[in-house]
Structures are given as structure tokens and as C-alpha cells.
Image (cartoon, rainbow, N blue to C red; front, side, top):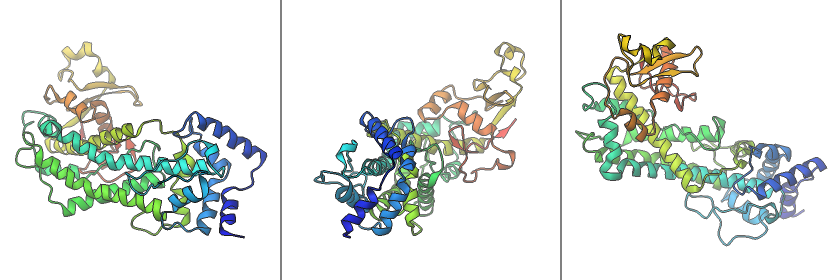
Length: 405
């Protein structure tokens, strides 16, 4: 039997009537949802027709080398070979057909769209770093200067501790991917590469925030640009490595099972309804958020900022006039806590009247920050906090390890 015949048998396995019906149902859904399947149906078809087994068999016979994703799409799956097709880089022409009738094999749309969505997500993350730099650099580094000039509590708000910057920057940027809620080999791999890139930057690149970052943000932006480059290079390496040779970790040899599992059992088939521009913007905003969070946490840690955890009655504004501490601007009722409590960020301190608006510009909000601090275990209240996969109110657990009052 020829190699083409072997590949055809693998990619077009015999299906039961039930599997055929499922495949047709999903094709009907795909016709109205070209970015992927709606209602999280991706894993249903992936598991229903045994895509992991199909891909494992194919890669066993055809080892993932020399642009395996491009070759399987062009040579095996799509009916009309495109004039150019590649998913190796973030600017490559990675465009796939989104209708089942455009494929030679019924497995074609499912594998192709999963690979394309993987490329879209990674492309957005890579380009998100450039967009984040643009945000910090815009209008004469306005956002960078706000980060250092309007986020501190108390009378020394204009004094910036460079040591706090370095401590905060060590936290890196934790990715929150648009396709996955948490976990999975793909998300873990990306997070590892980001952290590795940040550590490399800290070790090799002389970070510099200048003498007065509140009034001159250029040195900080230049440091970000240099520090983000290793992260982007790692992400580019993973994108190219996976699409070219099935690499799932830049530091270890991938097995066929690793390559197959990287597609998340069909989660990548779920519709990504955002445009490419919206994905990049979302990635950039998250990078700004997580970068700013580490630095703000470092500043507040140096200042000894505390979080008040009070009886819920202390949030009754009618009692503020007789409350010895008054009711601070950042006091609110945490109704999603059990038991319900009254929380206050920066209890006992004055704050810059612009602080809430400044935090919003940095994609941060008082409530999530305060809840992250309040739920940090007492034993973990060290700065910088240890690395963790636990997400607490939009941040890694204990991003804000502030003392409780």
C-alpha cells in the first residue's frame, strides 16, 4: 500500500452511524460559526470521532518534521491546495478553510481549525507584548509615569523605591489565555516560557527606571522593551517548534503523545469570536495589568500598606460618621466571601484622589486587588510571592501579599 493510501486510511477512518451523525451535526454548526464550534462543542466532536487516536496514528507513520502542520494541511486535508500556507510565524499566511465541504477528509476541518486557533492565540500573545509597550510609551510615556507617580499611598506617594520595581518585575507576566480557563499542557507551556523569558531578562539585561520614573518614563519603557524580547522570542520559538516539528517545550524532547495532547482534546476547536485585533488588544491589556500589578504590589509592600478585614456592619455608610476610623474611599462589602466581610484597601492611610482612576488605566481595580490580598494565606505573605498556578480574582494567588488589619 502506498504512503498516500496509508495516510488516507488513517485520516478517514470508518465511522459508526452515530459518529457520522455527530460529524454532520458539527459541520452544520461550523457553517454558521467559521471561527470554531459554538457552545464549547469542540471536545465533543474531537472525542466523538477519536481525533487523538487519528493524530497519534498519523504522526507515528509520518513523524512531525519539516513543517508537519503545513504538509498535512496542504497535502492531506484540504481539497484545493492554497498558493501559500504556513503557520510557522506570527506573520505567516495561516488561513484555513472553515467549511467541511472544502476538505478531502472528514477529519480535515477539525484538525485544521484547531491548529489555526492555536496559531491565532499564540500570535496574539506575541504581538500583545508590542502593543503593551505602545500603551506604556504613548503620549510621552504617560501610562508609565502614572504607574510610578500616582499609585502610592500616603504623603510619600511621589517617592519611588527602585528596589520595589525590581521585586515586582521578578513576578513576570502570567498569561490568561482566551481559549482555556486554566491549566492544560498548552497553557502550562506558555506560562513556563514567559517566566523563563522574564528570568533571562532579569539576569542578562540591565533594567533601568532612571532617577525619576514618575516624571521620565523613557528608561522604564526601554527596560520593558528589552525585557519583553526574550519572552517573545520564547513564544516564537514554541510556535515555530510546534508547527514545524511538534515541539511542546523548548527545553525537552516532545513525544508524539505530547504533540497530540497540546491541541487540548478539542478545546482549540471552540469558537474564538474575537477578531485578530481584539485578541491582540486583550493580550496587551492583560500584559499591562499583570506587569503593573507586580510593580504596584512592590510599592505598596515597601510602604506597609494594609488591608482591613472588618465586620460587614462596618460597610454601613450611615455609621461612618461615628466610626473612629471613618469609611475610607476603598472600603466595600465583599458579598462573595463566606462569611460576608467588609474590606478596605489602604486602611488608615490617605490616598491620592486619582488612585482609582490611575489603577483603571493600568487595567487594575481596587476590589479585585483587595480580595486577592485578603485571600492570601497568612503563611504566604512574603514579597515577591512564590510562583503559583492558582488564580485569585484575576491575579496569581498572593500577587498582593499585603498585611491584614
